[in-house]
Length: 190
Image (cartoon, one colour):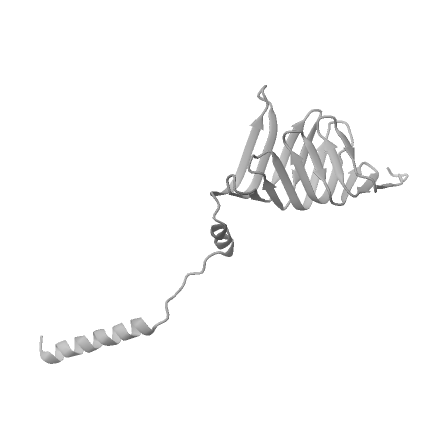
């Protein structure tokens, strides 16, 4: 190769190196949800949770599903997105869901928040339909509690209370001290 050819290739290489060094580096964008997850340093991140618990006789007792779970081990509560619980408590079945949830590190308490709905279904009886902003289920005692305003609809009866306590063992409930109940009138078409 002649001197001019080498000089040309050297100049071309220098121009390419100059352009490469002056061009801004391209950054890939990280999904904000993933960044939030990695910033918190969880022990595990799971999607599509579906967990079942059976009693001593092999009957389904509890089902927990969620879109995702951030597990912090024994350092903090695990965080759930779109949690749903199905609790088989004879003679009824409970369906409880919310937009957000937390599991205590020992996994004995589930707290749900944001647009919480709980339905109790029992064959041949009016269903219970509860709505509120928070709800907590204690797995050890089978008590469901809330310290926020809760609405309970049973057939044609609407009750609103300032707190809630449901004993899933006895199917008894209280709505606190400040309760308002309204009966809907039956029309001739009912």
